[in-house]
Length: 80
Image (cartoon, rainbow, N blue to C red):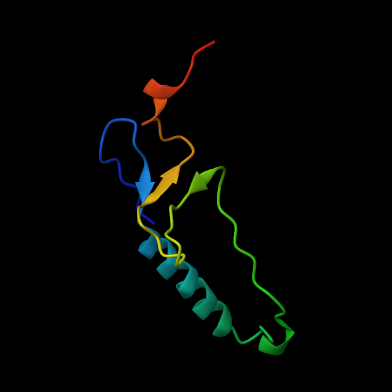
């Protein structure tokens, strides 16, 4: 997935690209001859570090994924 930097210190990813990557991974798993589909009980997903994808009440993404290292709110943080 491509990371974009729309402004200085901003880091984002397109949620649609993330979802398509998940679907490709599942499709690749299903196509492996050694994988017994009946043995799959569940699939877990994980991401690196802290990030977020804002969603609406229907669970649909309303904005890009924002990385933990995105610094757009730095001006609002208190420095001790």
